[in-house]
Image (tube, rainbow, N blue to C red):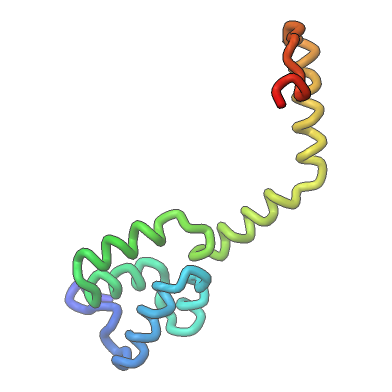
Length: 115
């Protein structure tokens, strides 16, 4: 794509509208747009910049930036991190070791006394 070309060049107006709608949806990743229309994330951003008003584009960029739902690879890695076996056990072990190394002073406060 040359600097004079835009991502919308060669696309039908209906396709541009569909891409914009897909980009606005929170649950549609950029990879789905790339698979259907052949536009990578950078091209979609350029298309949105050219097709939307400045304020609308800024609002969209704020919503999309860093959102895992828009990046399928980030979704997969986030799900993988959530389902790591033993991560809860490791946290419990680290907390118990920290309590042994740095014991809390005795306190007269109990759950019952705070009710």
